[in-house]
Image (cartoon, rainbow, N blue to C red; front, side, top):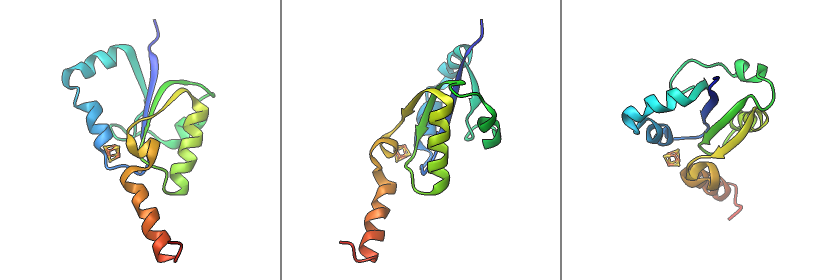
Length: 114
Ligand code: SF4
């Protein structure tokens, strides 16, 4: 039986979301029994080009952590949405901006928007 395909990506992130997954300790071996990791730049040398070459919906479950702060983050969000059956906004940075979003307030203040 083939394994479900798993991906995880960090956009503008502190790395804590990645640590929270790895902190499951030896249960990571169970994850390995169920999933084939096909993209996870934090733990191995995956290339964006590999993801671009995957068929749409190739990744069964992708955890996207970190906020969108630059064009690379935005491109990867669109790409992983296209390549994943289920894309999860994982962690508060991904779903509400969290700490990285505070810099938008600072930039707004610097530009006189506030
Ligand atoms: S939600 Fe954001 S601040 Fe919290 S651990 Fe994840 S990346 Fe870090």
